[in-house]
Image 1 (cartoon, helix red, strand yellow):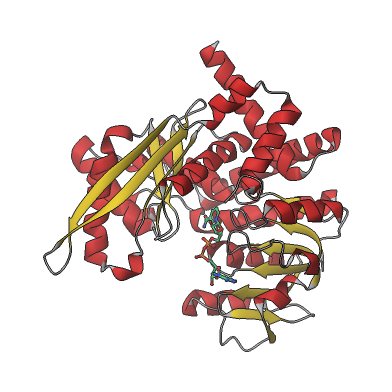
Image 2 (cartoon, protein in one colour):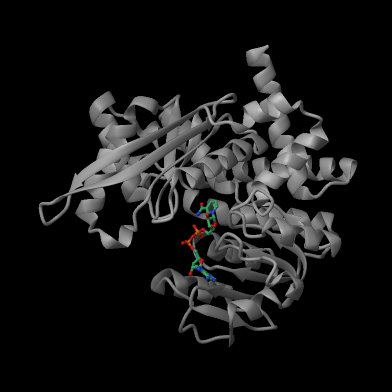
Length: 410
Ligand code: NAD
């Protein structure tokens, strides 16, 4: 992605300008601290050895240990991992979580491997990055195509080398020190941010019309909580297509159906629509919760919403965002909206270090407080500086890292 179409680099450049940061400092904060590329050989079920390449990028640890997920996907390469690691630095800073940013991954299509092959590969990868991780150094987590099982293997591998260490990864199963509330955290955070946006944009939340693209972990939980707040979820979609009911879909039933079938396809309410038709629906809040670049120059002019709540990472391209700004359609950026996941990951780590479990009620309350605080900080800056929410978010995040950097380097 070129820097002009990549919303993150464009936002970084504009935020740096607004903050009046010197170019040498802006450059220093952009360069990753460390990048590790490793060979990961593992035995396949047929007895043959297969070698794949893995990465761990540690972008910045000025404010705390590196933090970020590990992704298994055929598109993973060093550039993608670097850009995701950088985003984590700004996300943890924006939420004022005492972490930096990191990311890792292996460039494979995991659907082509058996569970035992994935286990051998994961364990070998973790051994390969062991020299640069640690419970106060770098704490991995799940990302695309990795899950609580993969985190259990990682935790087990690290514990064999260093002694029982649940705090080495987050996103673990509850039985191994995972946190209550983690599964729903990103969707819950998205719903909280939508509610706060409704208040500031003077859109009555009750009966407000919501459209959600993507009904996986994030989209389905966001729908569930927004429905509980009284919103009317008029359309949702997944990779199989969309469902539309102008009177509002029966979200509790759809949530259960999707939980069981892992798709909304076959649910017996609502008119079938395409993903393109869904994006063009007239609504108050459009929540892209599926893919990056879902809203781009080919479809941005068809949008008919008041505010976009970016639940996915990078769902609106830079040029599309500029057009939306001209049309006065608000965008609440990903680093704010979907930060509920990393926030509860942080809570999981804190509980592991304390060797003490919090209740789900405690976790949810602390999550809400963090999200609301960050939202208000960004909104105040947006108002004072007359900049979009994305730029204000990056300004808050960069400023916090910059101040810590000055204190440590000065
Ligand atoms: P998921 O795999 O659980 O769900 C993805 C959903 O998107 C599924 O319903 C899938 O069918 C749908 N989808 C895929 N392709 C689509 C298409 N072409 N059109 C419409 N729908 C499509 O993933 P998730 O965990 O819900 O993550 C969704 C997004 O949120 C991703 O961008 C992810 O990076 C981001 N995110 C997730 C978390 C988290 O904690 N899960 C945290 C931060 C950011």
